[in-house]
Amino acid sequence: MGDSLSVRQIEEQDWEEIVLLESRAYAPLGLSEERAALESRAEASPTTCFVLARGPSVAGYLLALPYPRFRYPGLGRPERAGFQSDNLHLHDLVVADQWRGQGFAGLLLGRLLAVARERRHAHLSLVAVGGSGAFWSRRGFRSHHEVDPPRHYGDDAVYMSRPVGDPPDGPATHHRGD
Image (cartoon, rainbow, N blue to C red; front, side, top):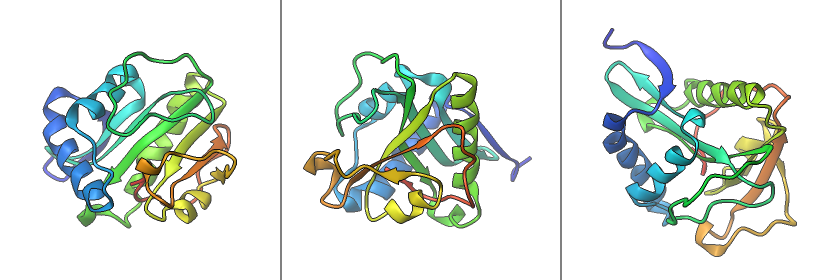
């Protein structure tokens, strides 16, 4: 069981590892958020937030929540209330460095798309940061340059979206990114 792999809902004991993964992925980009902001996204939509568990450890996580299309959560700002929207915003997808390149982000994205279909969301959106736009384009996301994310997302941030009905292409890895 030590190496078993599963995608499951986030549990309270996962947060310490989630915060550590988030910090390692985003602190070098100046995009790291406090635990309260991360937890608020899961509280707003617990059924669309997951961890990739490898045995007892968290090897990755995904935070998504219903959000109006062409809008996005502010970095570092906790969510105060959930939205009713046919758009599901993928706020974070991070896979631990040692597990990247093995298709694990694709498992998380696949689970999110399945839940989005079940919940009848029409679109999936995200803000690609740190040069990850090409990665997301290969998974069916299209850039919307008419939407200008604030500078606190980084100079190269790009708002992207895709229809939920399309299957994801290829293996996946890291977003505010991954």
